[in-house]
Amino acid sequence: MPTISDGISSASHAEELPNSKHSRQSLLAFDSEAAISVADVSVRYRMPTERINTLKERVVRTITRRTVAYTEFSALTRVNLQVKRGEAVALIGRNGAGKSTLLKVIARVQEPTSGRVWVRGQIAPMIELGAGFHPELTGRENVFLNGAMLGYSQRQMEAKFDEIIAFSELEAFIDSPLRTYSSGMQARLGFAVASSVEPDILIIDEVLAVGDEAFQQKCVQRMKAIRERGATLLYVTHAVDSIKNLCEKAALIDEGRVLYYGDVDKAVAYYRERLQDSDMQISSQRRIAMVVRKRR
Image (cartoon, rainbow, N blue to C red; front, side, top):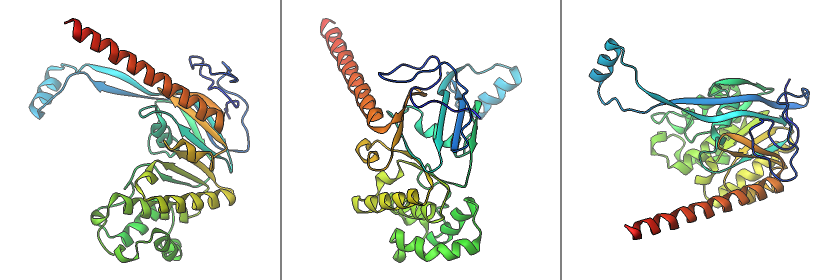
């Protein structure tokens, strides 16, 4: 089974960072302690460069065999990553870096274009707010629906139901349609279900950002309890200060590549350096644009 070393991603075109252990060898020895192994995973999308506005135009193009021009976009490029059982790993990076795409591939929500992913254990993913919920069903009905999607029986969910509702603090609204819930209420219910079914692997993608501060702290305590039970945590957030209290490792992702994987403090430092460099570049581009406009 492939893994990567603690340090820079094994993709040969990845940018080297200070004190990283870069290796051109992408497939290393399999570690039996791994809960998640990602090997040379790439995700590419085909995006049309011209717009088809009507069904008639699409039919005409099909009949006349006029093909639509596409451009290819790489969301992930030869990503290698290994997370051991019981580890808490943060994925950090700018918007559009590829973090959510990687989580979807690991959660089997999306198939990679190339590469392979191995996962050991039951996964409880919270990747998108409202995923696994139906807006016309009540909160109560959605608890059982979401539990079924996670692989749990109705009897198992009945045993957990009171605990789920108590944690979400939605007793007064549990029999109301989900469409009447605010985004924060949906996040409460989704996290309560995902974290109460005792998963082997909990995947969270920034959905807690919509909750109030008190509930966020409550969720952090629940995630710590899950970790103490031996579960694995994969966490995406832009609140980099919070991950230091929760995660011991972090992967810095930029433009679909893992630039660094290792110590969380180093990953955060590299991330902030890149943000600063990016801000300076944007500022420089703006100054150049202003000079060009003035000369006109």
